[in-house]
Length: 625
Image (cartoon, rainbow, N blue to C red; front, side):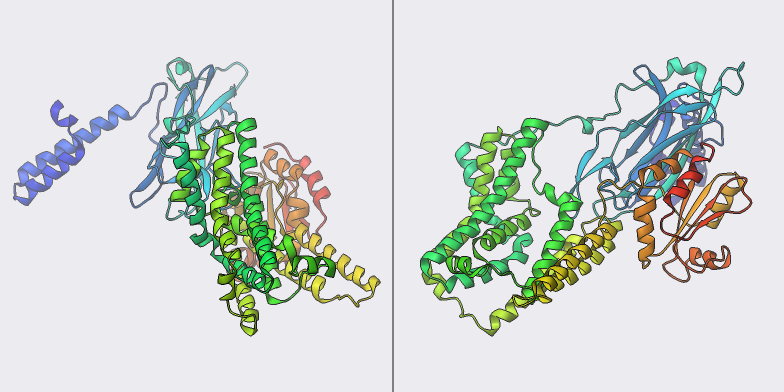
């Protein structure tokens, strides 16, 4: 029988199926009994952990999420880490299914992995997470995630005895795990799971000791350089730079390059060559900037530059989106860039050398997200070298990208074969504007979802202001009117930026979706509740968010006082929050904030925009949660 119990359960199930298929019912029944006995024994052997006593209604392990072949589960157990005692939350799962380590890179704020522990017998400190891993998503962005097997340790800080004379023996601990899990293909719905366990404080000396919360995957990795010779690596870098000209990422700017070459064809050979090299200089300046950034990271931070890092920064992506929108308006003829005639006559182009350099710089920027193939080999070799050699390799990549344009603009015979400027050129220019808008929309999709709509709003306002700046005034406009128009334009841009653009220092309040049952349950437990009624189309609601709910002191008080923060979305007429706003709370519209204070007969309602001071006073008077 001991031999049978050691066999895998799948073996018993397979043999049982074979037996039944042969109509050997008694044998099948016997195998079924054996399997049941093995399961019972295994359950009995694994039902307890050192230092813990588990009740039937206490859940110590649970599957968090699963999809197809991907899964992740978690269990809790008492543990020690050095001199600290606490709870170890052990995650186990497949490597492709991951949780987000940072709020900035999560699909939405508040969806990063959170682990919290509560107990009537213990106070807990901040969870100690392992070092995150880097995961490359479908947009070639590297994001910080937790995946596979890892441990989160939550230290016990103080004991809470029921009475002054009693001694803590056993206590129930509840662990709340929330966040969102994604694979390389899809993201699953956000989840929240509760695990419980009963621990025996008197047996803490026998608790499992974990030396660190880091796993093998979390240990610092040293970059091993591929076994290339320096001449071979430089040749590879040159080839990598050449390959950037055919990458999809640089396609949107190719029409701009073609137009510039066509304009250069109208000038003399000398001017054409100079303008071509100015364009190449813009490309080299970008790669020089990457080299400087790599030097700073290696010398001062002990790390290396990752290819395309700038596109992982939402602020940079936002700036690129707005730049492309402005360039599209330029292509549509909404405004023109003019320079004094003296400069224009020297440059041979209305845009001159700065325009050529800027276009080259932009072409190099847009090439960086496509970091694969030969480029990955060359840049990976450079990362493992001394910063001086790495700088040379990065510059050579830029030379490789710029070389075709230098050759093309220095060969008048090729330029003469280009079509002569005419109506086609104006239509081609306007078509480029639509191409730039398409790539801007593509970049917007890489931004956190919570900011995408606001970026679109700001882009529309920015376009209007560009139209005002370039179309409402001319050289014949009176100076006073010109200054008034441009000051008004700048005020509109700054005001729209303040309303729509996300701030780096914004704080996040853990808003929950409107649920009448959750609100009623909190009120029954005498817990303060804050309901923010809002809508996507409500500009005043967004102003309230900026003025009130992005304040650090307000967010901190909501957390300290354990206020249940509810976001009541009334965007559509059939939403539960919309019906409750009218039928339950008798309010005509948004924005409105309702604060339920325990013990108060009526809730406090805020209909205005500037109510942060009054709300802070009320929150400060609440009993800490």
